Image 1 (tube, helix red, strand yellow):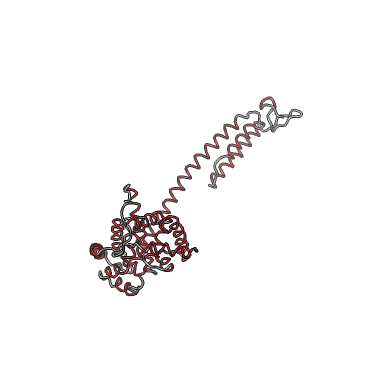
Image 2: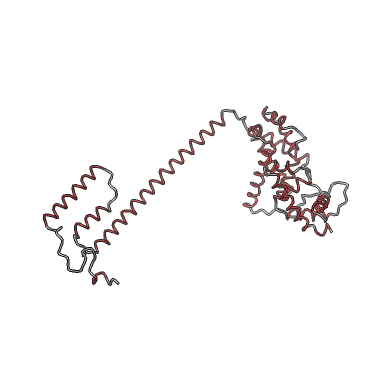
Length: 179
Length: 167
């Protein structure tokens, strides 16, 4: 994420009030935010909906974004708020999220058995959300603990311990695959 | 196997799958919505922020003062009504004790002492005048003259037969 576009260039684009900044924001954040929402909501369809509302919010709050001390943390905060608002709405409307929906996929060219991916997804889904998001960011988005702590507004130690606890649970949940 | 090696094994297994990326169709759709929202939102002028904060603070202050006034008025009414109820109750209790020496004077003084506090100077003077008149009248009528105490019995306590048994 940090390698894609420096903060100051993005801030300048936002300050100029140029709608082209939306494209820059997409290039920098879309992939990571989508992963973050995917593991939080456990539904590809819901993640797409919330991603849209996150980008609309970013466009509406662009003036505050330019003044934010940490751009990444601010964007993740918007995503977190939108996701929790969506979950609240889902609860109020008594919609049950589809557990059969697949949000973890096998890369093209790889020949992993489908049931293994299903087991991985089931194991990740059974983790507490806070541990799941750290593990997914670390493993699938190759983020360091420091980067994750900045995005989530947590201390480095908290992120590391969430990762450790999550891995301990996964060791139990994936016992049959590991052996 | 140590923890790091076990974690490495789990990480390797997890990496056999991956998370999907947002599609280009989704990018087009979301970008269009975001640009639309961008154009609909007017640029925020620098002076608008402090003015908005000032208005919000003033509104909050007015609301707090209004709530405080209302609640204090309500509590005062409650307190006054409960205070007068207690005074009436105590007065009636006291009137049941008929055997107290200096009965009328004592009753008057007690009931006067239980009135709500008097803050107005003229009312206080009137009250003092009333008490003085009452005392002088009492003295003239001979009410204030105490009856001769019965040997071995106090003036301050009712007789044993009236109030029950003292152990």
